[in-house]
Length: 294
Image (cartoon, rainbow, N blue to C red; front, side, top):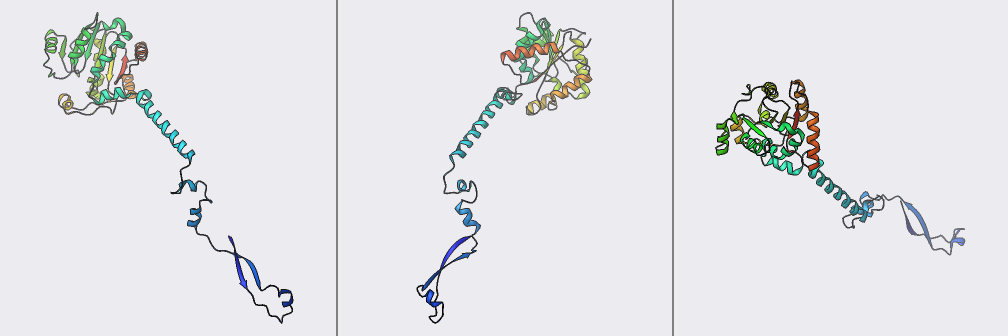
């Protein structure tokens, strides 16, 4: 409340006994209390009653401290963004770009090959690759020293490349439906690598196919599968495979391998991760190392 001074003129009767003592005062000033309400808008306008209200006033300058806080928050957000794009997540930006560009797990074998050789050593002498574009993978493997390679193309190949035709004629590459027994004797290969092919099979056929891969391998199986949600369905993919890829999580695969009684090859996996980590390699596909069933 505010004190408001009011001046009141009072005419004193000269006949009154009290007029002698008050005769020298013709004007008396009276201080009164006034309960005039002050509106909320005026209080907010003054800005003194509410903390920080002055900094929110449109005509006032922003607080230097507020500016510093905003700069620091922006810096932390930028650092977090850079970290997440350069290795803070499971798949880095370069790897993700390869997938979005249509890179397959079969082509990922080219990147992983040096580390697979360190993980499996002599087991890389006789290798069977199963999956799309197997002609290219087999050609790459045959260029490696002391390595023999064969391939199985699970789908009709429209590859008119002369090298691929030559590999098929020589019997190094076969076109076969992997839902049925493979045309090889047991333990024909030291190592079997399968990429992309399992992603197009339903669980009904996955079980028998994995057992067949284990049957023809002696030292292990390497499974390369895509990450869920990181590859788009393409028209060419639908026309070739008849259905989009079913990309499953690593936890799903681990449970399925356990149901199929295929054990993880921990020794090979440890060597592969050590070699890949030392070189800074990060795969754009899930890679599983399994033991062959005896």
